[in-house]
Length: 474
Image (cartoon, rainbow, N blue to C red; front, side):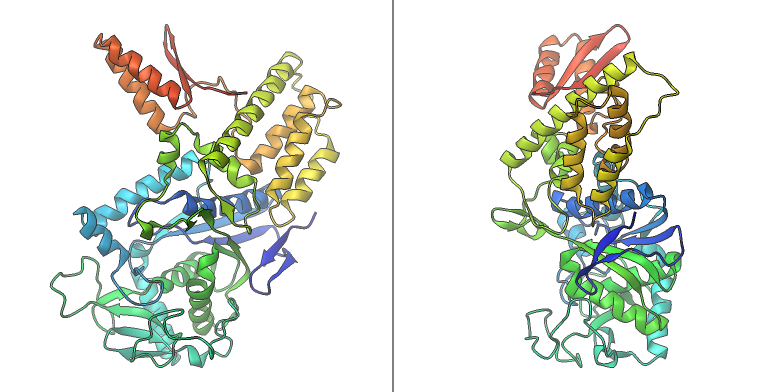
């Protein structure tokens, strides 16, 4: 069955045809690690995870590269302001290198809690400075660059189809509507490839490198072009990110990559819509934002949030509220309880030779996920299987386990399977309770048990330790 994907380059659904049969090169824009990632960021990372899972489900061998931006991303998406990493350093008192390691660790923990499959390789921008310099040299040699007092810039007027991804009306672009227009730039849309370290700054930059044009640091956009070229080649299959990357970041990636390589950059561009609160798009610049830990602290499992995201198509805006998340938690708990009942019944009648998989139901699921990742419809197919009295428990179990390869909801695991799927924050409280009991501080131990219960987790004391169970509310 064909996979169809909505290609931002062309604004239509297209049948996916890989460059090399059976293999897919996938690049997804990852985190800028100057702060925690909020759940809006993870909505984008989750849709990219679902895409990868669907490709794997269809039998493709996927080479997945995700960047970790630890230098060059300025506080504006253009070429003005502080480097976000330097700003994070000033905020916390840590070095930029410590900042990068610190927030990368939290990103990886949250990604694991949300069941995001790890990429083939994470690529940190600071590990590939030479590759970025080499690409700027390539553009320089081909006459696409010019130098100003603050950096080396790409001359967008020399590329006839600049802005094709975003359908930019360059002539009608007003100053300030896209980027702050420097008087030294030749064109409004020109962008920095290499920024010079400020000479008049009282504070020396912590991240800077020598280059043929002077000491400085790479522009934000060049890292993705250089690292994708290194690991996926001049042309590859799919590039993903949030919809906010379309007019600037991804547009500039295309420009510099195609100008340097002389070939089409990417065949399919996929972009996810925003997670929004009632006040608008979730953003770190507003100060307060919701983390995965925030959800756990309020009694929700990270997979409750994953279920919530599955209920809305990745190209549609998703409105977040605690009431909506509570509904997702209730639905998720009911689903897991129903699946557990199916699993218990199947175990009683299990025969290792019985690998029955009703093809009609699997076909419905495959049709849904292959239709531009239609996860709301895929969930509907799953619930239809769970409630279908005409299917045996073994048939249902086999289908649920199969569907879970895409959905990533841990439906292939027993609810009572132990403590392996308990969030780290919950296990911290469990360990504190164990320590309190050992110290015979039973009042504190009881208090911690109540706290865990309020967060949706039950602790059962056993002879060989404790068992931690998620409390269903159905």
